[in-house]
Every structure is written in structure tokens, then in C-alpha cells.
Image (cartoon, rainbow, N blue to C red):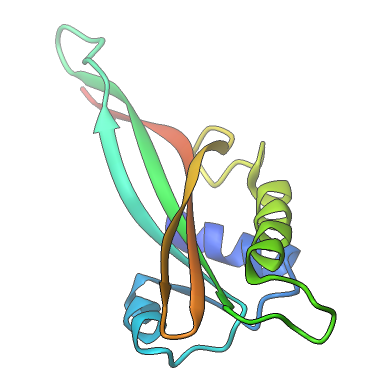
Length: 139
């Protein structure tokens, strides 16, 4: 299981309010409105290697960012809850599941940032990014 899959499984296991937790391949479904809301969609965002610390080989710390887009229906529910309120509740649950948790061979997850991605096709889309790091080595 790769790191993205581990993050997805962690959210699935810890955040039971989601009707769907998937990867980037399902992002097109978000844009076309064919999703089971609320949903969470996990994907690699970026990675950056630090300086090599060896003279006769390679040893680098690689920082990896993962995005998590949360999609909720952009309507007031029967409890008169705004979509942004529902989104923040879900973000807090994801944050509780990921902060300080370590995927295999990685450092503990840290929160980076979050922002509104779009209000599209009746959905409120919010993306948050989380950071972890791993080490690569070849001698």
C-alpha cells in the first residue's frame, strides 16, 4: 500500500461521516456532480527533496504534500446547516485523524493549509493539504 492509499484508508477508518473516500481518479466525478456527498478525495500534491547529506552516496529527506478535497452539497440541510459549516466539521474530523499519525516509513503528518477550491455543480469543494516526509538513500 502506498502513502496515498494509507491516507485514504486512515480517513475511511476514522471519519465515518463520508459516503465516499477515494483518490484523484474520482476527481472528475466531483466536477461532473456524480458523487456521493459528503466525499473526501486524496491525492499527491507535490514533493521536494532536501540537500544530499552524503559524499559517496545519496541521502535526502523528501517532503511530500497530499491534498484532500472535501465535497459537500451546497445546500442548507434539514438542520439548517450551511455547506461551509458541514465542510468545517468534516475538516476537523480529518485533521483529528491525520495530525501526528505516521504513514509507513514516513514522519508524522502535519497540517499545511486549506482553501475553497470551487462552488460547482451544487457542491462546495474545499481542499486541505497535509505534509509528511520520508528519506531516500542510495550508497
